[in-house]
Image (tube, rainbow, N blue to C red; front, side, top):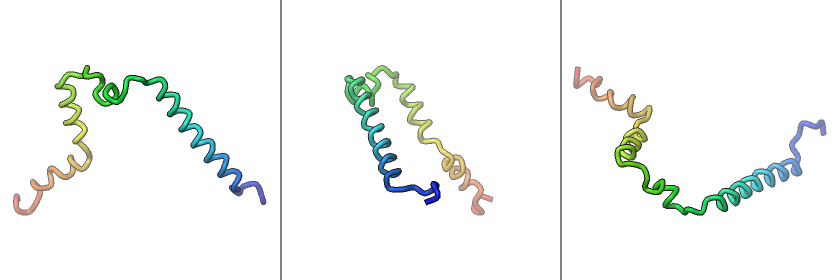
Length: 79
């Protein structure tokens, strides 16, 4: 063993660290947040409808929209 190999103890330590960290953070933030899912998903119903509509519009925009939408105009049938 030249010191650059990953052994099973190294993998076990890494897995325990990653899983333990996720459980610790999840428990901490679950204890901190007691409002429930409605507060999280609906923001306590405090966001006005124009902002929600803008959010829906912007979330549907992507690279494929900008590339795919002009395609019918550049087809041979339109030229």
